[in-house]
Length: 230
Image 1: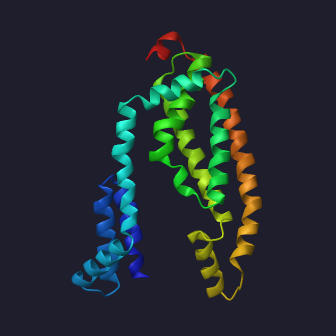
Image 2: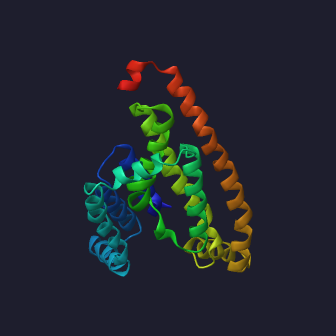
Image 3: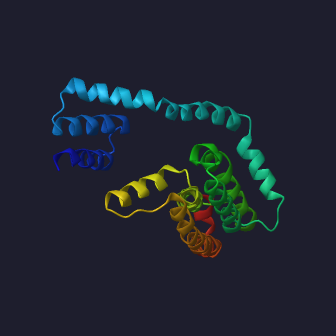
């Protein structure tokens, strides 16, 4: 059980708000040493894993692209666009994104969404603009609430949608664990049985998003003009 000490290192590092890269490196070193590996073997294994999965680093190419788009007024154009749709509300907009995110993830298209690519530059500003159209200027607390729900819609959509795709790594992991326990199951069966869960997640969180409009209305109505101005 000692190799599991890396999990404790990760938890402690994140609680202490230490740099994530340092936390991961320390967890790798602690796990390797606890497993009886030498420091050289630990670094060698870490480098091999990084080299075999170096495509993960491509996500950093998105950061400068998003920065350039925001500098060119991407968020302003998104807010202007949603401002023309009178029927748009924060809850309806996030519900639509939740549905699209879940459907695309079900087809294995996870890269079509994401916090850096979609939520931060587009979905969150559009959701804030929809709330501003109905309630006027938003206080900081309301903006944080909208942004949190935008991020949650992305997380829930991809989490429950990706298991429907038969070639997803989560499906293969579930199959491997069950097979190790003596339960033989085909990946297709796992994908099929993931559909009811995905549908339930869509309806449950969709209802929460629609109730978000009422929550925002009550919160903003209870605040005075001075609090809104802040």
